[in-house]
Image (cartoon, rainbow, N blue to C red; front, side):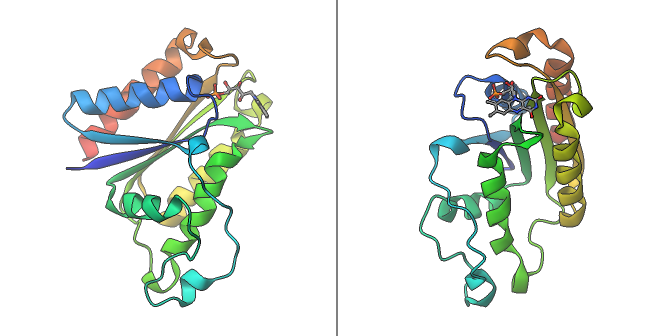
Length: 188
Ligand SMILES: Cc1cc2nc3c(=O)[nH]c(=O)nc-3n(C[C@H](O)[C@H](O)[C@H](O)COP(=O)(O)O)c2cc1C
C-alpha cells in the first residue's frame, strides 16, 4: 500500500494544523490511499548531535535511542512525506525542525533514498499573509529542501488561522488541502 506520512509539528492536539492534517488524510483515505499522521509533540525526538556516526556506521543509522528509530523506517517506506506545522517566530515549529534535522542520517554513503517521493508542506499562521507572518521563510526552507531531495509535487499550501478552530473559517485553505489530497492521489 502506498502510504503518505504526515508530520504534524503543532503541540495543539486539536489545533489548526491538526484539522488540516485530518482533512488531508480523509481525502486520501476516501480515494483508497493510506496515511499515517505523526503528532511530533507527543514523541521523544532529540536534536541532531552532529556526531556523524550515521555517516561512519556500517548500517548507516543514527545512534540515538529515541522515537526517530521507528520514524526512519516509516520515512523510507512512505511514498509521500507531508510536512505540516504552525509558524512560530517566522519559521516552522521546532517540533518539525527536529525531524528534518535528523533526516540527515538518511544521507551520506547511502546516497539520497528520498528522491522521487511526493513531498508537500502545510503551514498555518496568525499573521495576515506569508510575509506578515514570516511564513515566507518556512516556505523557502521547505522548497529548497524538496528541490535538494528531488521530491515530486513539491507543493506548499499555507494560510491564516490564529486560535484553535479558526482554520474552519478559512475556506480557501480548507479547500486547498482537499485539492492537495486529490493531487497526491493522482500522482500515486
Ligand atoms: C510560540 C508561538 C509563536 C508564534 N509565532 C508566529 C509567527 O511568527 N507568525 C505568525 O503569523 N503567527 C505566529 N504564531 C501564531 C500561530 O502560528 C497560530 O496560532 C497557528 O494557528 C497555530 O497553529 P496550531 O493551532 O496548529 O498550533 C505563534 C504562536 C506561538 C504559540
